[in-house]
Structures are given as C-alpha cells and as structure tokens.
Length: 62
Image (cartoon, rainbow, N blue to C red; front, side):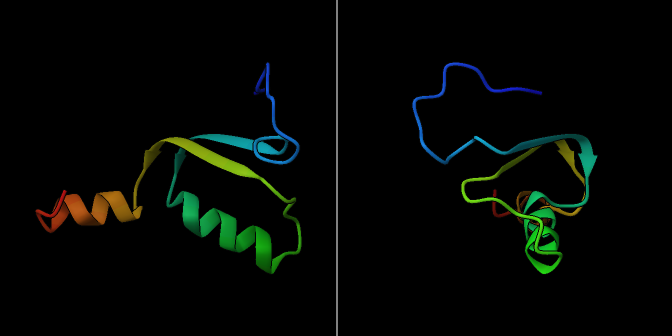
C-alpha cells in the first residue's frame, strides 16, 4: 500500500498494512529489535488480536 500526497519528510514514508496482526505496537517493537525500522514508519491493521485497544475493550475501559 502506498500513501499518496504526503507533505511530510519522515512520517508515513515507510508504511506497513496488515489485514490481521497481534498488535501494531508489538510489530514496531519487533522491527526495532531486528533493526529493520525507518524513522517515521507507520504500522496499521484492520484487525488487532492482542492490541492495547482490544485489551482495554475487554476490561471495559474503552
């Protein structure tokens, strides 16, 4: 997926989209650990199975 019409130097220049993933935050941390992350990388997902938002929903906080 490509983000068009960006007016940024860094944010969104590197972008990953997943239909389903455990957690977008966990994916960022995996990228950091593997030293495969670029400044401004965005990670988005249609569904997160273990994301913080899902945890907050389950706890009745969202």
